[in-house]
Length: 215
Image (cartoon, rainbow, N blue to C red; front, side, top):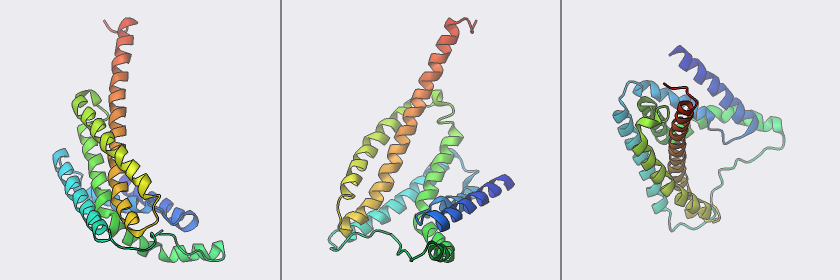
């Protein structure tokens, strides 16, 4: 517990400095604070973690899609989420330092369900040894690779198209498309890595056998 808290306190400090001194779009601080939710679910089984992830993810994506549907006919320019810059770097640093905590809370409330859902998926993968023992999960890894890339890549192409549009409706729809597509593509990529790792382990075993390393 102590190590976990110290590491995430350090991560929060890095995120705060990143936000105040470098970039207004920092998400490291959100990771550091929302990861505390893992303390509440750490003892859950892999099945319960998957159920929690599914419920939180479906809720967040559902709300985002409803928002996109509600603004489908809205006209006007796309929102940019870009802050107004002050004349000097020092003035910008001072302003960002003052707004850091309120915006961190706002970002956690907005992105919290989705990020915690992803944390739960990672915890479930860790509990089952999905990537550390890929030889035990070959069928699942294949399904994840096909399903993840099969859906993630088309959603990525849709996101690229939406990002070429300057209307408000496209900007609203781009958010759930980005989150859903990015998640599926990443899981598909990691599943491919797991399959490759398994093949590599098998190849190393064959080489060891041929070299007389095994009786």
